[in-house]
Image 1 (cartoon, rainbow, N blue to C red):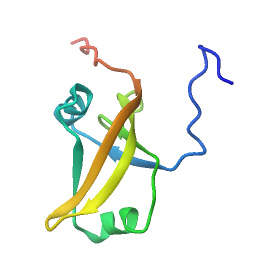
Image 2 (image 1 turned 180 degrees about the vertical axis):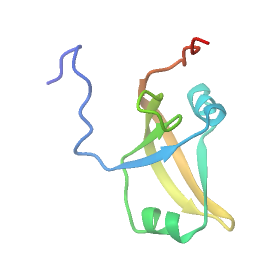
Image 3 (image 1 turned 60 degrees about the vertical axis):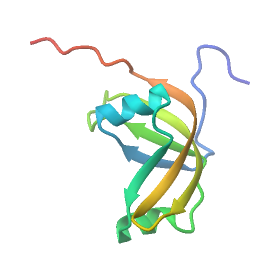
Length: 103
């Protein structure tokens, strides 16, 4: 059982790691983006086809303290021009909103 000060443990779940630009990260949070589209490439084919995921870890940038969001993976479809990843509910959010950096 987890107490209120502990973070949820997602180690037993299969997580797809993706990076998003700020505007797309915000749209997911606002509920305005229900799919993430990825190119039909060998790179994404090897990571999506024949694999099952439980969660998607979105990062808003490459820095270690970048905002992160854990979202349920609700499926992946291969469309004519891209892979369409269906986004489920937001499970966890870290380091958001972004605080302005001092000049």
